[in-house]
Structure formats: C-alpha cells, structure tokens
Length: 418
Image (cartoon, rainbow, N blue to C red; front, side):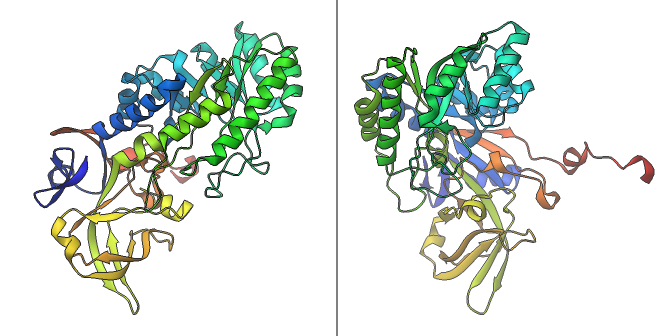
C-alpha cells in the first residue's frame, strides 16, 4: 500500500509527489486501506477468542483515523478528556470507550461518567476515592477496572515499559484483594474488572503469556474470595517492524490469550495503537541543504524533531527512502539526516548509510503513523504540519497546516507591557 509505481513512491494509488506539489512539505500521509488491513487481520485472529478491540487513541488521535476504526467496530482507549471528546466528535459509541491513565482529574472523571463510558481504569486508592466522590455527586455508580502491575519485564525500551514495579502504572498485583475489599465498601463504585498493560512495541510475545497468566491466577483468587470478575482488559503494546524486527504473530497472540485467560468466562478486550496505524503512515520531507563534514554527510531537511520526536526521545529507528526510486541505486554515504531545529537531538537518522540525494529531493520517513503527529509540538515556533489520508486514488487533508497566526492567537502581552 506504500510502494513504488512508475519510479515514484505512492500511497495506494496516489503519488507522494502529487500531494507535495499541492500542499507543500513536510506532511504526514496515511493509507486508509493499510489501517483497515491491520485492524481486520487482528480482528480475524482474535475472533476465535471473542476479544474486543479498543484503539489506543494516543497513538494517533486524528478524527479521521478514529472514525475509520470506529466504522470497523473498534472501541477506544483514551487517556485524557481531550481524547474522549475526539472520540465523541468521531461518533464513536461512548459505551465502547475505556478511560485509562494514572492522573485523571475530577473534571475528566465527571465527564466520563456523564457520557456513560464503558469503564474507567483506576490506578491508585486516591483515585478510587475521587471516582466514588464524583460519581456520588452525579448520582451515578462508576463502572471501573483495577489496573494491576504484574511486575513483568516487557523487554522493550525503558521509556515505554509499564509493567514493572518501578513504573508508575497500576497497583501491585498482590494488593488487588485489598483494593477490591476497599472498593466493595464504596456505594458509588462497581469494580468487576482487572486491567493490565505491560508496555509498548512488543514483537516478542512471551511477556504477555507471563503477565496474563498472573492475571488469570488473581482472577481465580478474587472469585474464590467472593468478588465477581466479568471483564479482563488485556492492554495493548503489539509492535511493528521498524527495521529488522519480526512482525508480531497474531495467531500466537490469540493462542496466548486462549491458554491463559480464555477459560475464565470473562469479556476480553485488547488496546492496540501502534499496531493498527504505525505502518500506515509516512512523514514526507524535502531536502533543504547538504553539508559535507569531515567524517560524514549531513542532509538537512524541512521536517524536524518537533514533527517526529521518536528518534531522539526513544532512540526510535525509522527507515528512510527517497520518493524517486532511481535514487535508491545511487551511491550510499555515511549520513546524518537532520532537521533545522537548534538541538543536537534534532535528527531522524545518525551514522546511517543512505543514498546520495540532492537539494529539493523528497524523502519518506516510514512507520510514522503512530506517535508522530500525536506527539508533535510548536518548538522553535514551528507550525504543526498537515495530515493527509489516502484512499485508493484520492487524498484528503485531514488536518490543515497550522498558520503562524493560528499558532500565536492565544498569546498576548502582559498588561504592564502594553
């Protein structure tokens, strides 16, 4: 769905050159069919275990992406009031929304309850008390899940692992019975679910088996203690092949779910984000300058770390390809692909053997559909760049390029400076 046709890189049946000529660079571009393909493959694999899919909106919160997946039957996992409101704007059924995160405010909790979302995942006793108080003030009973921390190493980057004791997420698994006991005494709480999420970008699936096995044991223990557990939220984290990683084996993932929690007679759900949208997107950028250093070449492009922060934040690898296929065959040189921001961390690739390119050439940074535009900023007063969704031979700008005036409109001079 992202491939060369007649010597030029296309997304589906639209040439990247065509889009760049119309809207300029840099921009994000997503394949509608690739998103559907990823969702359908996962849904098919998990249908054997009757597992529901909730899209982790933090991966890509564009309204058109949320709507695309909602139309396929996906729910949503949100971590802020803004994400919740985005889902509602995309006409996603509120009863298919799970609200996660360690720091939900009273305002966010109240809005979630007013919208009758499916579940709020609670991560501390203090949050449990707040939810009970907010629910009581609204005359509601909050349907919540307890996020447990199973102390399982997901073998992923330290900044995206979430299931170890030293991480901020969830409550210690062994303390779940104490938590259920406290929740049972609260009149505006209904706690009948366990939730777990051990990290992101998992292509090796064995940590899931260990974590889900622990959750299964705790589910049985809680039931033996008289608590009703009818839903298990199994989290997300399925990875994608950024470089030489293997794709996650979906049938093996389903087998792990079946073997560990499949016999518990619980509603089951997972919350993938990156897996659904990551490979569907590219960041398109134009070469501004080429500078030859003593030991390597610096290719300076018009995109920057404020557009895609993964390489400097997570040491994230992204394959980089020219829009023109003939450039692939050119001589390769040791290269740093960098942006114009005044930070040494402003790079997309370091010490990489890349094809020799020329000024004004277009490049595509691959696997940028997740945690790209969603994590973008206005650092260096750089306006946010467009997002484009392609379907077959048509494309639509689903987020316009931000103007300087739009970026600055909420700022004003202090009264004493006027």
